[in-house]
Image 1 (cartoon, rainbow, N blue to C red):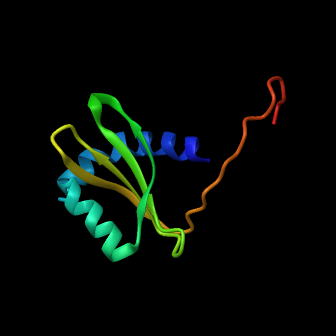
Image 2: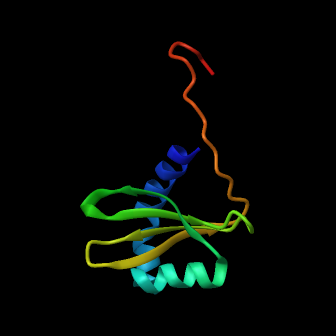
Image 3: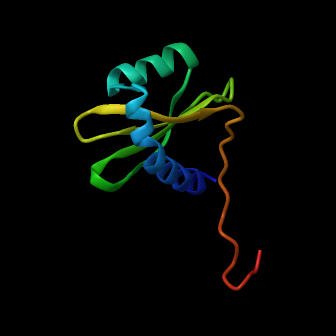
Length: 101
């Protein structure tokens, strides 16, 4: 699930980053992280490196189930890409090779 979420985040991030910047949903990373923690109780759950050294992170609250995907550019500016509810932490294994599932 995390890999799927990371993949979705990269795809969504690439498609939505320009839109997020135009909507002014961007700020210095430390301010974004502080707000996610203070207002929503979210902490970083996973991260990945994208193109142009952009860092995609998933923040979530295990208690409330809220989640947020952010992308931080190399200049330190973080943009909100997506958010929602019903976050679940999963540790799924890949199916055996040759299995059509």
